[in-house]
Image 1 (cartoon, rainbow over the protein chains, first blue to last red):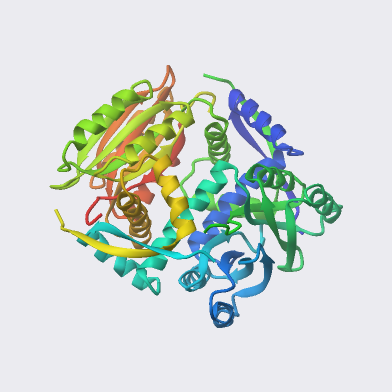
Image 2 (cartoon, rainbow over the protein chains, first blue to last red; image 1 turned 120 degrees about the horizontal axis):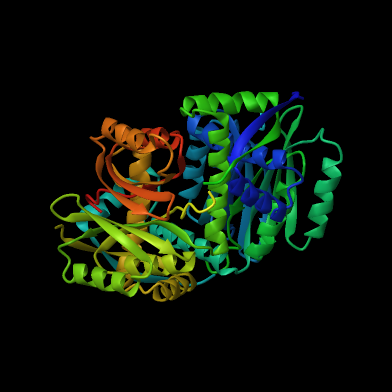
Length: 137
Length: 137
Length: 137
Length: 137
């Protein structure tokens, strides 16, 4: 746990007033939390661009009836087992599954995994959710 | 399972050549799968805009040492239990957790949940990953 | 011109160090300017969501050889003349034009204009660039 | 001008029906135009990722009263004159200007220009609008 540092910021009064109204509307407890969130978001964008170690999730929607789909998904995930932490499987309805794969590693490798999964027949939708390992955030 | 329909599309030859090179590079098995993915992505964007029932995930990075954080997270999630399907918890390191909450419901309610979670002290990062229930995709 | 207000923010030391490295890399003169930019960006996102008056640009790439395209583009733009401030036309090559239309108005109306322009035959690409009227920023 | 090629695509009937409803709602004249737009959008995303020559616009909102701001903006723009095609200046109100700079070049250089402009004191907001030179689109 790192120590807290205080620093001061100058903003135009009208701008600060608008920001205060926004963070009140969003239920933020303090201005510091709101500023810290903005700072952390900008650092996470940068982590992904800079190729540093990141964490996140890959979401897949697919039709489990498609022949051999499940075994191909498992096969690809094993090829990337260094990257994959765990996965969560949801039966959306009779046909559709939502699979959420938690990942951790280099952005380029995560994107390669997404490309592999996306191109599999029967996978209807993929989404990469970029998050962070939280280190130094 | 719905029946397949064939239809034809006209593209400039140079555009089709570029598209073919791209889908080969991405490992797509067929042009139909690549076009279908583009179509489905555009429909999912629309599902979220139109307020229809959607599915997705909320990712949180937080420091579990923060006092009362875990109980507040559980508390908020119970307020939105209609929306939340299940969650996956990853211990990133000594301090940081990644929690991935699978959700299903109206976009506006999902966004309200995200705002609630985001404003909690100790939550360092939130990301909403928009996906789909897969119906008619 | 509004007066400046000073306020203080608490961040973890490690987080502030990372932020300082980032803003140095990006050439920011001061921390206040960097924080103000993050605050303003978040307010502009909100302006578009909340339907307040905004400013921005619509970019079009099109092939000016397409029959009647120019006259249809002019026609649509006149239907939305309340929204359109001015436009800039660039001859990219023998066939392609880039047109950049500066707009100001309600987000919903700007999006309606984009839809109209996008669906015109010969328009190959459209992009809405969301910015702000700058009021109270 | 390139020749048109016809090819056929298989989609599930329910998916095609939804797509047809969407493109009707958006006013598209034909399915081919709608598919071509999706294909071109995906190629433009790729152009920016792959570092090929692109076109676009940089939007700036700034307060022209800020001392020496105009001359610094001109100075930076001259450093990147190879990239900048032309610019459009809008007086939003007594204080605020919207400047829209049409650019063409490598994505990395465009992003470097944006960083330079963003960090200048008095510039309140910047937005990079990614478009295309239209070649082979």
